[in-house]
Amino acid sequence: MKKVYANATEALDGLLHDGMLIAAGGFGLCGIPELLLNAIRDAGTKDLTFASNNAGVDDFGIGILLQTKQVKKMLSSYVGENAEFMRQYLSGELELEFNPQGTLAERMRAGGCGIPGFYTKTGVGTVIADGKEHKDFNGETYILEEGIVADLSIVKAWKADETGNLVFRKTARNFNPPAAMCGKVCVVEVEEIVPTGSLDPDSIHLPGIYVNRLIQGQHEKRIEQRTTRPAA
Image 1: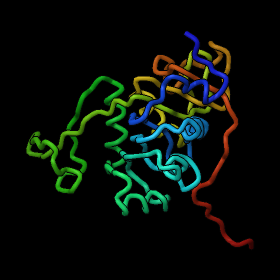
Image 2 (image 1 turned 30 degrees about the vertical axis):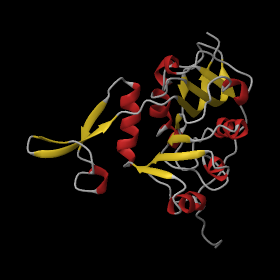
Image 3 (image 1 turned 90 degrees about the vertical axis):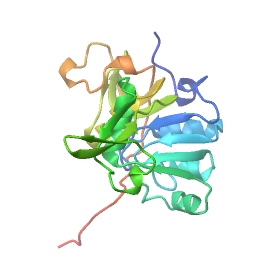
Image 4 (image 1 turned 45 degrees about the horizontal axis):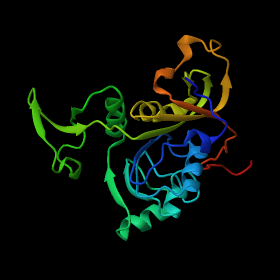
């Protein structure tokens, strides 16, 4: 199977349609599949639902699709750095389903493992639990959360071989692996593609069986919150 494509537009060819559910990796501005998001913007695909930890910022990450009004709904755990997200949500233009971070990650992982749902204590007694099944185990109350199976996964890794085995860097490993797992089709962008067999098997974070298409590209290294101190 051919997995390596020339660019993001080619890698997404035939996969996009209006109203689809996309699982996107990234944590803050770390590990965002920026090239694929740019290609989705350029394709004009609309009424999208995104399952992602956050919505980027106003001009980066999923934020660029909010600017073009291509996103209908977000399944997220943190959206505090995006003013356009806040404006659209408060004005009723954007639907939002809040998930605790661990719950969102586990919903993605569960979907990728063929697990339709799981029980968790997180959110019990809060609005997160409204309308969800409750069940007691050993005297403790849990709520049922459903696994996420997305039409498409888009993720960013540091390095891959030609069969799609992936290595992530630091914080980029948080949400990208479960996001990659839960898509019916997974497209990955990386900083470097190396020959098959050159990665140490013990260093592979996600096996290539989850990856359908792969591109290499240049990526912007943004800092979300810059903290400095005065020079001495």
